[in-house]
Length: 355
Image (tube, rainbow, N blue to C red; front, side, top):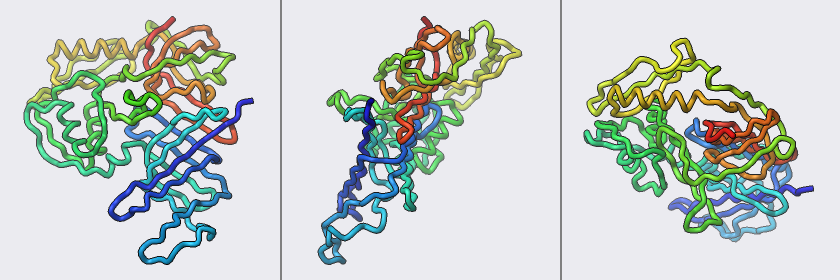
């Protein structure tokens, strides 16, 4: 039987107010739930520690203290909001990074509960310069301006997009990204991808754009009666679905353009948005969106073991109980680890290939 293993590392970033640089490492926990979602601005991780836990003490005295007796127990939970956290999980000592981010909140009553967020935590604290940008603003220019000085690496999902005249109105970078998501249908989220400079390590990169990224992804297979534990899947044929796409655009002068819905006029409506498209281009954009949503294949989710490890935007090749194979982009992922085992619940996104 495979043996579960974990390593939780929490570090205090050096700052003017705190030069301790403390670090805590745990090799046991009661539970851990990680949620990665392309539809959400922020990925989250919630950890519950064992009830009986001892904390490492920083032996270096502060200016107002005498030397500390390291044998004296630490009564208060020393972890603070903003501490960096890395979660590594696995089997038989083969641990892999599942989450990297920051502590958002600590519930100190036993058992200690630690709520964490990915790199978006920092952008929620980063002030945005509220100002109007020039008439030739592009998405790349806007994101570069918002992230200037933050040290956050980013990639555009699509080719650069002309936004025209643009005004930053929100108080933080994360709020402005959420405004792009809410008003203009852009996606914005962090992904853990391999570091090309050191393939053994991962790094967190912000992705922004309309579609799903197809770089830095891997493909893993999941087969009924082998590593698919449970299924909540529905197989639908494109010809049996009734959908229509309502598309809108906005030019550089902020003039809004709309076209009649494309698809089944009595079908479920999906709304899409794109910048700087004329009516003919907007119709083509809507037709491509209809193909993306109206496909033959599976919808839903399935549960599998903690390995093979996948992240959102990776590709899942599935062979479910109905025998209909296919490759799908992973839209959402929920990881659970604890006394109940190590599991991944994978929600399927767009079909990549139907076999």
